[in-house]
Length: 181
Image 1 (tube, one colour):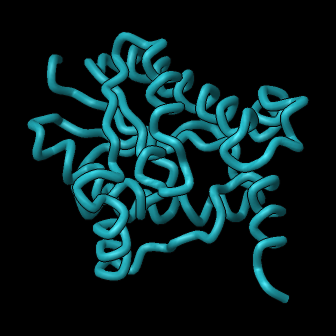
Image 2 (cartoon, one colour):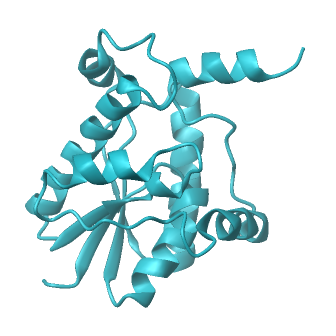
């Protein structure tokens, strides 16, 4: 039991180098796709299909959470207008890490972590602080050791779908404002 780790995975491109790194550290890896923040639902399913593809490539278990966007919206209520990297994102991290901690405990994983630290758009220190609330949380900063560059390379090699926003409708709106017309 001491070397089983559940990796909360936001998407296949972020999961690919994360799995490699955690396996190199000697862990028996399983992936967990728990992302009720993703909008629209078609985007969620596209990312889930790519996670299934990745779990087949690595031959690891993929645990799939139920999509419950309404529960996520309720959790972040009052923070919808927060900027990217603000309190809304922290509430989102809490939502996903809480669900991951529950599944890890239920299925006997000794540890869990998240791929969220791979993104250059996420502040790892904030994710670590939220994760520290759970004794089973293992802090990995997947940005280090060229994680993001490895993500791009593996995505090209395996033809993985790379999205242009974190997933929620609020970041989608922000992203569309950033794109030149």
